Picture 1 (cartoon, rainbow, N blue to C red):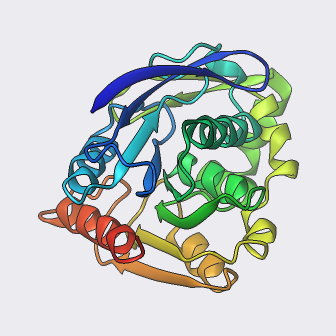
Picture 2: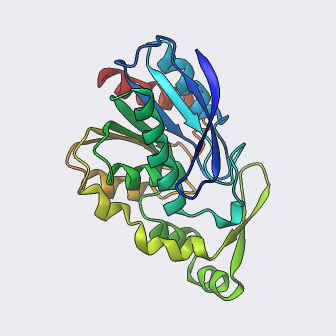
Length: 253
């Protein structure tokens, strides 16, 4: 059974997701799949994970963050805190359906939001992360540089260009929200099994972040893919990433 559903964030903004449960058994696990920045629930990663997990009768729920895909919201107003709220509301939605064994997967921006969300709930049984942003200030300082951050503050907005060359406006409120979302601090509160996969040639999120946070989580396995960039575009790298992530989920389910 696969169906498109709608649910609201805490401010009443309508979000869109796709729920897929091949077994139709609420006693079985369900995994929330969180996409990266400027992508959607239709990302290649979330689709492939849905297919792989559904083969094992593990249900999935992939949704669009605020301002992304089919969800409502003005994209420039997105923040990490908004993403965290979206995840927590998706957990509430699944609990209302009767599911009690809920797992969480997050990619990049979705990974950072997933870390924060996992620290705020006792309703998860595992956490899987693909190239997560553990600390956005540290990441932006390394990737953008101090001058660009000062320019962002002065102008009140900046433009992010994604892998497809599409330009997205980002308000400075995104930066101001960093102070409330330090993954390194929140990782200390997460005792469930955690899996992180990251490429050591990642140009968007320094692999050092995952190395650092993996040592903070009480129960974590880190897998570094040699030569992989942020999209795992090298030969065989994407398939290996999917198998390692799904393998962790299947083993712990």
